[in-house]
Amino acid sequence: MDGENSSVDFRHSASGFSPAERHDAPTICPRWHRVFLKATALGLLLLLLTALGVQGWWLVTTSRAQQLPRPSLSLHPSQGVSLGDTVTLRCHLPQPAAWVELFQDGLLRSYKDMDKHQVMAEFSLVCVKLEDAMKYWCQYRVLEPPGVSEKSVPIELVVTDHRYSPPIISINHKNNVEVGTNVTIQCCNQGYGGIIFLHKDGHSAPLQHQDPRGGGTVTFILVAVTPADSGTYRCSYHPKASLFVSSPLGDSVTLEVTPTPAPPGAELVSRGNLVVAVVRGCAAVFIFGLGVFFVIDARSLWIWRDESLGGEGI
Image 1 (cartoon, rainbow, N blue to C red):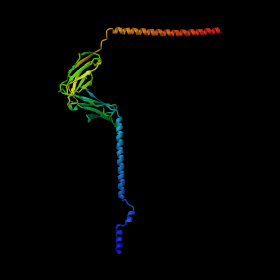
Image 2 (spheres, one colour):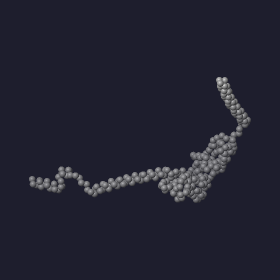
Image 3 (cartoon, one colour):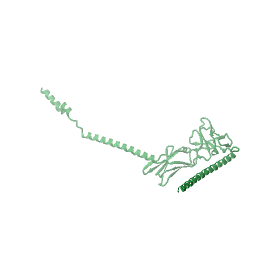
């Protein structure tokens, strides 16, 4: 009996609390654990605020960038650029900028610091190579408030490679055709494949283009020509392996559109119509004047009658 009591007393002293007392005793959180929880919560809060701040800054920057109008990019000369030539690209700005960037096929090619009053940046490509034949665009940046413009509309630098043979051109009509005629022009790329272009002297861009799709000849149709279609036409082609490389312009054909002559007697009919129109106009004026005269005369008669009746009454 004493052994049991001593055993019970031993378990009580070893654990410090009886099973029931241990169950009812409150759980005490150490101080370092509380500090850890507070620090973790504060860190998560700071991380969230930082993420929101970065997102807000990105939205503001993006909105400012969208508000800046886009520049325009021009190429000089705009066509007929051959290997070894010098080309100037001009980025025209709608407002002053801190600097202007020139991109070549998506990669930054060059940039220029700008003065406050400059509204155009020039970039020169000296001794043009085949690697320079691709798309270009520009954009500008401002500092107050900070922002970046939209990219300009891309332009294509097409380089003429004289190692390719010029195309062959032919026209199915005589040089002189009447207004309203459909004129057919054929161009052959000499078997090099690729897209064939129709050019007209005095125009910077090609008028039409076609893909022969396995063949070497395409047909361009000028529908219902007018005197504005008169001029000199040539062809070129872009070899299939090089998108921005062109052959030299080939030989030319000349088209002259003459107005359709008036049918016999048309001048007499026109003069007769003019005489009839004049006679009708004069008759209308005479009838209108006669009507005005009768109205005035009738009004005068009524006034005279009223005056006469008034005098007899007196």
